[in-house]
Image (tube, rainbow, N blue to C red; front, side, top):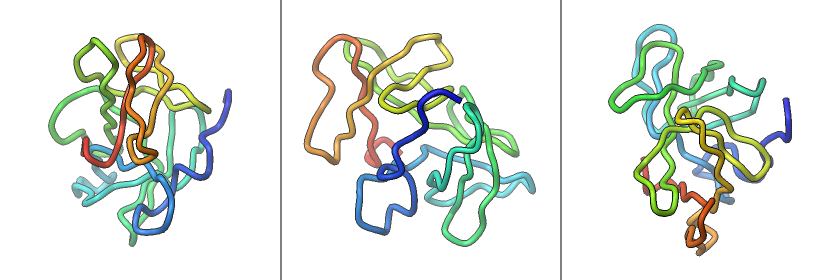
Length: 126
């Protein structure tokens, strides 16, 4: 599976910490998920996603708008590049559907991506 996601950046964003909020998600029954967040990484490409009441295992999706049933989306903003969608999250990098690999910087830590090869993601991108 590669380096797993740091447990300090996943979980309910209502709790203390620097949790990643997904951009959007759709459960298998077709319901759009309000305020989706990653609970746990299941495999390299699958994540347990919750809205705080219901949890399902979803894959990440490469598109704007609401993803199809069983998928979620997460945007990043790489330095000197437009917004891209994340295919997988690793220890300190994200791989996008465009084939790029970026080291990520979490804006809630008071940091921003300023160097080539870095990308921002934060709840503000939701």
